[in-house]
View 1: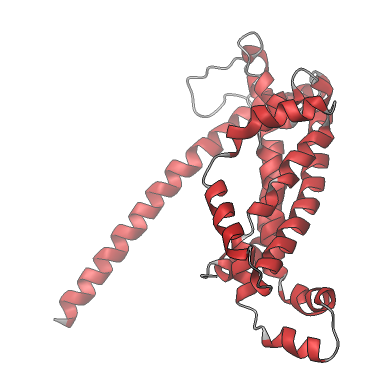
View 2 (view 1 turned 90 degrees about the horizontal axis):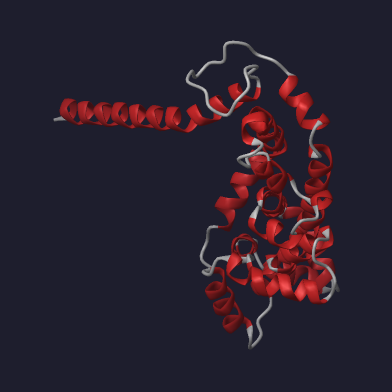
Length: 281
């Protein structure tokens, strides 16, 4: 009986590992292919071989010399950093309030926030665009920061779940010593919340870094204020694709580098933030 159970367990493990290997290959092949295209010397958007015949760095040079990729990259970095800072502050403020304070509108607000989060953000982009246009902010980078940071407060559920795991007796002890609500948060809760802060900041950075739809609608034809998503998409226009496809691949790699580095150095806190916030609040 024990042998049969052991065999079943071994067979199950083998099947699981084979499945994971196959899924890994399926996931990695497109990434490896786009990396190889970034270094491919032969021009054109269509290739009939997986591995290039010759490798070169000219695609990266052309990307910076013949396009505005450097400016687009700087625009995206500026918007992502500002949005990250503002969004993280807003999310932590709302999450802490929902976790620690009890007031009449608390539960209705949480229900409304949950319902609104079920609708995709792009449903409101036309209304947002005309509001920004009425204030003369269309085509401006500050508009993207306002859009990304403005709606971030509704995504407080994970952070609230994390704050719920921190014992409230710490708050009560601090208040007995005369601490204010701000002092309780800054001196007690904040130092214990590094995982959820890192998680929130990463999510707030990734969204504007990779967004295309809102950026395209708001920026319009103002090429100088394009983000990398819009700029790289332009390189795939029918009239330019044959010339700049390999440069597009090079740009895709450069765009992915900051995100990869962030996850490599922050992975520990990211996982702790997700698992710590996955509780019922």
